[in-house]
Image (cartoon, rainbow, N blue to C red):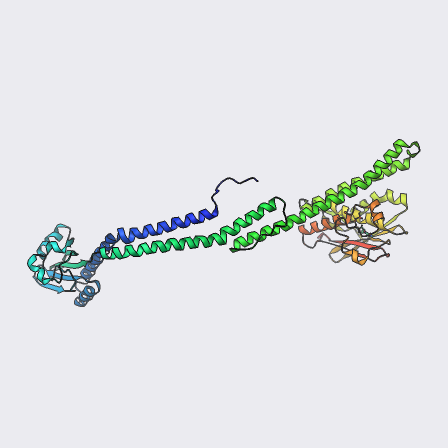
Amino acid sequence: MKQIKGNRISIRYKLLGNFAIFIICTVLFMWLFQIIFLDDFYKLTKVNEIESTADLIIRNIENEELDELLSTLAQNRQICMRIIDTKRGTTVDVDASIQDCLIHKGTVISSAKYYELALENNGTYLDIIDVKNVVPPNFIGRWEAPTDNQTMIYSKVVTTDNTELLLLLNTSISPVDATVNTLKIQLQVLSVLLVLLGSILAFLMYNSISRPIMKINEQAKKLALGNYTVDFQREGYKEVSELADTLSYASTELSKVEKLRQELIANISHDLRTPLTMIGGYAEAMRDLPGENTAENCQIIIDEVNRLNVLVSDVLDISKLQSGNQQLELEEYDLTESILNTLERFNKFVSRDGYTIDFKYQEHVYIKADELRISQVIYNLINNALTYTGEDKYILINQLVIGEYVRIEVIDHGIGISQENLMYIWDRYYKANDPHRRAVNGTGLGLSIVKNILELHNTYEENTARYGVESMEGEGSTFYFEYRILDMN
Ligand code: ADP
């Protein structure tokens, strides 16, 4: 079987691969952000916090409720504050009692130094200090526990209308090592869980997508080899079930086509064999027996050849009509005139064999249709009437105008059709009457062609053509079709 080139990775491996990539990326990002960059992130957040606190204080420096704001900020954000009026020498202190405060607990650092540093650096200076480096040994006693911690000092010089302020803020930086260790363990557990979860998910998806698709594929291969009985099971997701349904539908349609094809071949070969045997038989007799070389025998051969011709063109017509490739050439024309022309074709036959065909009409009626095809409909109906008419050899064609439709009736007084056969006569190769009679005259395709032509007209304009038959066994038949009259206004 021919394989399509291109992406040949199985959906199973693709799914597993994608899940693996997803899990590796997730774990990697978590390690990066939680472990490697955690310290940097934490410090960055602290810097942002201390800067925004300083901005808030400066904006509210004249505010009457400054004291309240300062103590709220100090408590909420764990920041110690000292605001020094450098001109007047006054100081406002807000002690948040943070663990590693350097501006309150004995005032380890020099405000003057940070004042200088701020001035040198455009008015602000941020310092991160290792506590143990700056706390002198004689201060240790005042500290609860001298640590390896770091502390952040932010200094800012602000000039107002009448004075100059030095803002000193201090917040402690907790070591992240302990946190990192906890996170590491958590991440290890999480990674294992993610791998497990990912594998379960991948397996579940494989079960509901990939497996049904692979099954369907196996069945479709059988279908391609001509096994139309394959069963496409509906399982998995909606789309996959729909695919199974579509393929099941395709396989039933294909089996129908296959059945029709076999039927057609059987019928055609049967119908071809009869005239060919006749032609062969008569030709041989004429060659071998001198007395048989008569004009009548020649006529039989000619008749059989004509029958073969009709059969072949009927088969071609029906296959064209049923394949859906037939295009109609719609035109506006005089239907009455067209029927008169068709009748002329029967003249010879009629006068030779003593048939009478009457055509009754009140007026000329115009329709929009494929004239050639509609003539074929009329021709086939008259032909049948001639074949199955009774002793009177009389056929009446009646044109009636009923509302916006014209009705053409082809009436004979022949053998008629039994009620149980009525619904089947429009089918291909349906033989309702005496098979002997049909073997001589018909192909079994005439009414099927009539039906297909009229229904094809309906696909161009809905409900434009209708057809039917009224018949009683032994009392003749009235075959009719109705067509929408062209509005000439
Ligand atoms: P056929 O070539 O056998 O006439 P048709 O498709 O034209 O094929 O007709 C199908 C069957 O319908 C015929 O075999 C015949 O039994 C029946 N039938 C058609 N027209 C008439 C009619 N005017 N009177 C009686 N039976 C008819």
